[in-house]
View 1 (cartoon, rainbow, N blue to C red):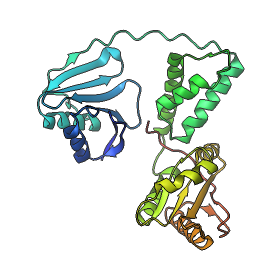
View 2 (view 1 turned 180 degrees about the vertical axis):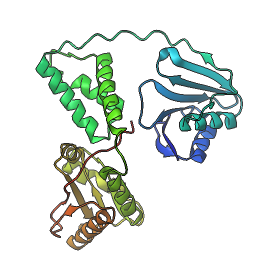
View 3 (view 1 turned 90 degrees about the horizontal axis):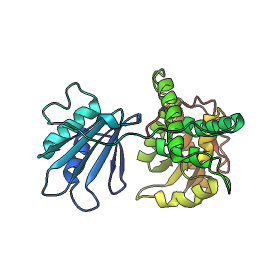
Length: 305
């Protein structure tokens, strides 16, 4: 698998794709509304990406940026196979992946200077605390963190953080976390949780991470996630994620789609068994009216972006 995220013009987001899946996406683009792909590595890094644009009947415009606007290169490629080979090599960071193409340095202009934040110490600390809280949850993208940074201190008559300042702050804190996670070894608890949720999904239990903003919204929206053969659900919402990131454990909400206590209890037992199978400790009294709690939990979710 390729450790990349691929975004399409029509708002699809493909995380960790195979070379064959990437090839299919490249061959697909060309029609109106579906003419480009943007690739980022995992974890996403500022000013590092590749992209391809194609209109049916024409060549492919292939570009990559390697650390800033002054390192943005482009070339024209006739055949999709050559594009696929280049993008696969880029994704794998293979030496010489860009050989065989006539790359040109593209003039993307000069990046404007970003003025420092003009904030009191307490405001700066509060802003960074808020961004870090979401960052440590592990599900936000750099763009989402920048939006939080821009909007968090807004009042009716004051917007103290500009979009450029917000992006700079989010990127700085993001890179700090990327450096921190480089020292993590082995499978983390959130990765064990993802593995348990995948097993539950395969067994007919809809399992969603960081789903909806709260329990009311989650319970209202989880029904839309059903598919043929699903019997029940389990999820945790963003407030649960915040608690986990703060070291307070994780609450899992579950139920049966037939609304019966017996089905809900059966789903709860399946959830606990799946978590036990990956080595995650649970606290649950067997009551279908009680949530399943994961505790203790070391919440170190690796960033994607």
